[in-house]
Length: 112
Length: 112
Image 1 (cartoon, rainbow over the protein chains, first blue to last red):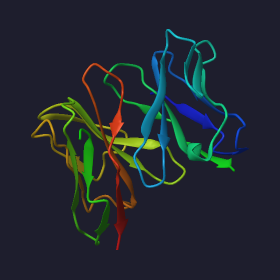
Image 2 (cartoon, helix red, strand yellow; image 1 turned 90 degrees about the vertical axis):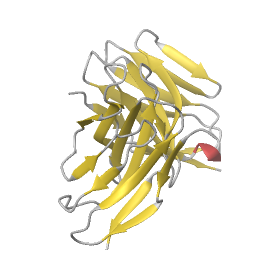
Image 3 (spheres, one colour; image 1 turned 180 degrees about the vertical axis):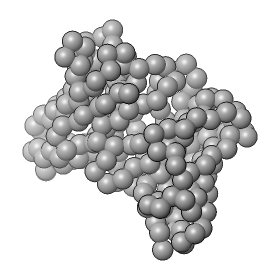
């Protein structure tokens, strides 16, 4: 089955700096890659996603890039703010409606 | 207000006891999922259901059981056979044919 690895496990940045979180996957059949943000004591919320036919997607301060050849995708947060502090999970899924495979999470702390 | 409701938020289990976690959604989604989250680990799939009266085991189904008698409801029972039940349990749903997962706010289960 699919194996998703996520790095780093913890990340601290100064407010206003950029943060980058990277994930790799093993199954070349994976074609959908969402990113979730989880605040303490809450369920994860989808913040951005990308499909395998797209190399990059941007939504305001958040962007995701995908390299299908290398089987890795990354989350980029620019101009970080304290409210960006949370745990971020990447995921991959090979087929619509099937299992999602999650990375182990990155705890991001934005220092004011 | 549409969404996924999990209850209770906190639950305690005694030795040898079965406990049931509730998950209700009013999003009219076909697919529902149960994930287990342990500190420092990614989300692991316990069970999922893509249609009423049908469900499949995920990666860590041993010691758990589910039912899907109604489209809106997907309760999870943690049986006494689950020897290490302490974890944060997340319920999710998605529209059939789409990839986006919507999560509830979770239930923290602890052993007394």
